[in-house]
Image (cartoon, rainbow, N blue to C red; front, side, top):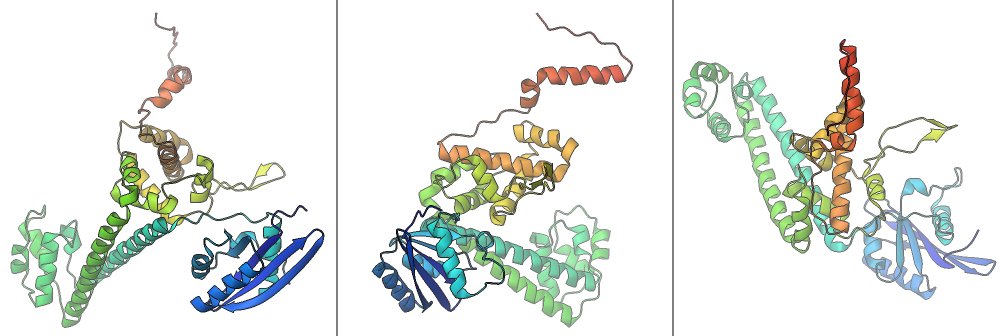
Length: 407
């Protein structure tokens, strides 16, 4: 097999150690050098000096948790780095050791058999950390709200039955009064305003059995929710600053139906503004996990489940797709309902999310604006097929139809 990189190295990265295998090829002769390093900055700099002393041009490593990142930061700019998916470069079973793994990675790299994972530049990585942390905090805040609801139900306070948001202005006033020791339903009802529930319904819902234990837990979760709100606000402000170099790209993405500022930030943070690492929109869809996997045997398709991809981008796009299909005058709405009748709502919404990502790819790659094809796109594209389907339906209802084109 042809050797593409005669002077390369494979790294088996762990939390506290890095096993490096240098592979040097001179004609048909192959020599190896093995060495183990620590993961402190001093040890990683020693690894860099050792690789440079062997004139290594290409280095490959596994994407092991977050442990590969310090190694990447130290070696970046000194040689060509390749981050490989650990599932794609597994060694032969029964020959598992750190030394064998490092040598195996070096052999795969030398023959060009490792597929590089997408590693964005530093500004995009920082923005990605902010958007992902924000999503985690929003999820954690939601968990505290659910626990708050459980405490209210345990105290037989039916606050959620008379309020759409128990942390809105009225709900927050009632919760703070409960923490302060107020239990009179009439006084609690006076703290609310602009609710659809009647006064009697409010008093019945606020007539519960609140103990000091309930008050302690209510105060605890309200404090945690406030802390999450402050952290989310700080992250959003920081993300807005980090998005400044990519403000034009984010503003262009916001013109897509269903995409707002937060979703645009996530898209830019996950794929970047420079899409040259993705040759086509299909490569991007495959990386994001918005297309079905290729699983065929003996000419039969065994599975049509979607691929595993970038879950941060995938979930955000699907949420945006649910918002986009509500616009009845858009192409995305027509696409969703066209597929929903045949494939179901879940598969249809994934297809809509894939269309949105495809549009985002071309908008960012070719500097284009969003242009909606219209809700009647499929009727205009397949008008003859639509006419035949309508005639067939009328025939089933017992009518005889003759059609002819208008002059």
